[in-house]
Amino acid sequence: MNCMKCGRETENEAVFCPDCLQIMEKYPVPGPSKLTSDNDQRRIRAISVAVLEQEALNGHTIMPRDLLVNKVNELILEPACHVTTDIMKAILGEEQNSERNAVKNPGARREFDMLLDIQETLKLLDF
Image 1: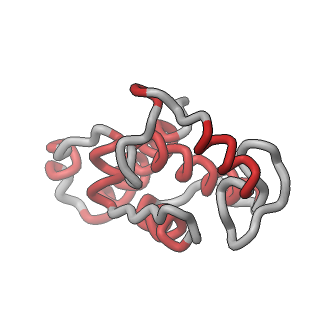
Image 2: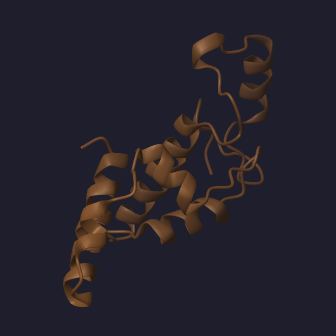
């Protein structure tokens, strides 16, 4: 993996190289831009977009949310980013969808679920 700041090769799948980490420690990010936790929604969103972009380069056009969550959790990051489907839903602002629950036909419900998953993925990409 390459450093997200300078582009140099990093060790152990690290996001930043040691030189960039030293600079960032010396000049920390101030207030509102600083991440609030390891699972800051901006970090999860950025990591999710990176996973989706990589999968697009591999020829995939659609990725179910469960698979996206698994791919994010499989990444070796420091600090670690542990995401659940519920966390992803909260970040996307998805509330309990009464329309989804109203669809009774199993085949139609699967199609409806697929459309909602596509819509949610596009939200991740800010489309």
